[in-house]
Image (cartoon, rainbow, N blue to C red):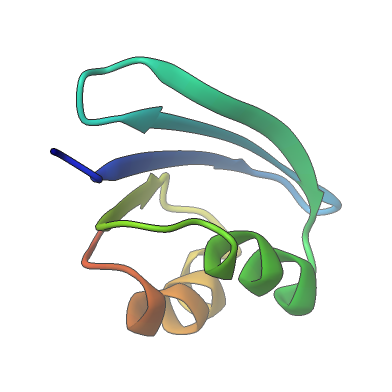
Length: 77
């Protein structure tokens, strides 16, 4: 059984649009989060399985990378 989850984030100043797919490519969740460290970490820590995450390079990329890297198996910009 594959418990992999793939997370894509579209990061903006006030909000982050998030989509999560499973190992088969099925969309399992979409949501909008506040761009706040505590909110983002609560979301990530609520997911189970092997997590891979991607988001585009932008003004928030450095702090978001540093915040999330310890909580995911793979992080790509």
